[in-house]
Image 1 (cartoon, rainbow, N blue to C red):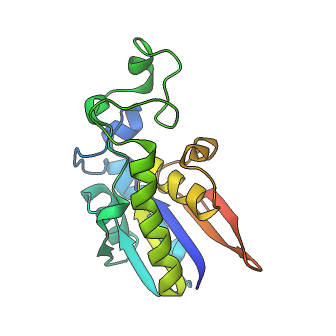
Image 2: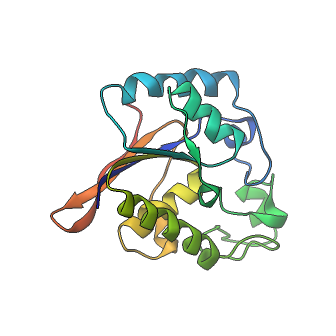
Length: 187
């Protein structure tokens, strides 16, 4: 059984900075995003990992590289598929769908919460089955879902977990109970 699952959200991109939903659009990190992602190397120094995984998107893989890792690509770590809302901010969506959030409303042409949960459950199972300490590089909404599913909560409960770019979060156990050990840390 995995003792800990460490998660790093990718560094800043132009769209993450501007609050635009980014799933399949493969954006590079901004200069500031690269700079902050580089600090992950120091923040993760001294911690060994038995398995390192990354979303296939360039922003996640580049963050892993800048942090000093050569991760295995895991397709199930991609961001929530936003469909017709790709590249659009929440405020823009709410002009036509009041109160919209990805966790509580449909994403036309995109993934449902159940679809995201199914693939993230495979990541949780893989991490737990692997054993040791696992590190993943991914995206804001999918990592929030990963935390919720690790904690045996509904996908939609990820809405309670704010996650900034280039942060470190750690999931683990208290005895046999899955717990949140550290969240959204920039230290």
